[in-house]
Length: 280
Image (cartoon, rainbow, N blue to C red; front, side):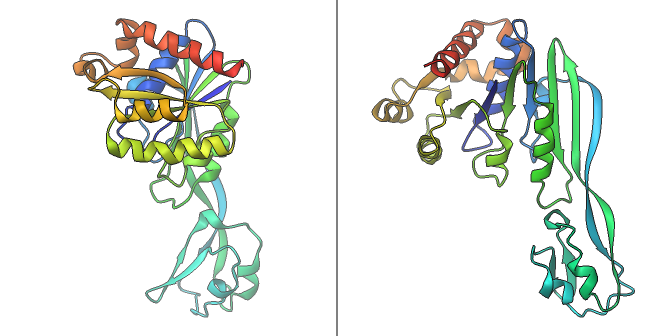
């Protein structure tokens, strides 16, 4: 089973919620938490594992020998995938777009193009207190790294529970970072901005008929506009976490806090709601 935690922003507490649920479930099932927010990796901050595997994800990409380049622009004009860009009298390469078709070699008048190995990013896998932690981290020089997330999916445990910390909704990686889940948990706050971010996500999931529920974090009020929207639209409200408990005053890491607080029951009930929804 795959449960994806998604959000419209990067400050909603999505990672904390994902890690907390994983911490509760690890004593009952084999649990893997996959940090697929490749531009802002932080699940391992809450769950610092012992890394057992670290692998680079590489592709073959074109490289230009500037000394041989005649600036004929044939690579720019003939590449169907937009790998080559003419920018300020220089050719910029976007290696992630390359399909290795060889067209650029055929048209290069100076024979200046060759293939080289290009690192999209790294995938690390480790363990912590019965949890398996997988981290997909993009190379800071990479422009597009969907393949990195496809590789991360190979670490999904088909016999266990997989909790995915996804890229925020505004990210280019939001769709593929979910790893095709069985259930979505939309983590949101109660502000008017959060409601604006929630609406398109809920509408999109309804269109593709994917089961999902809404989890409100850092709540300061009763019956907020977000709660009212969920009730009006008939959306599954998974729970509301009050602000004072959400911030935790920085006393304990997320996985320790949830195991030693009343919110252990909160996340147990959250899991029961997810299972109940999936079995309907």
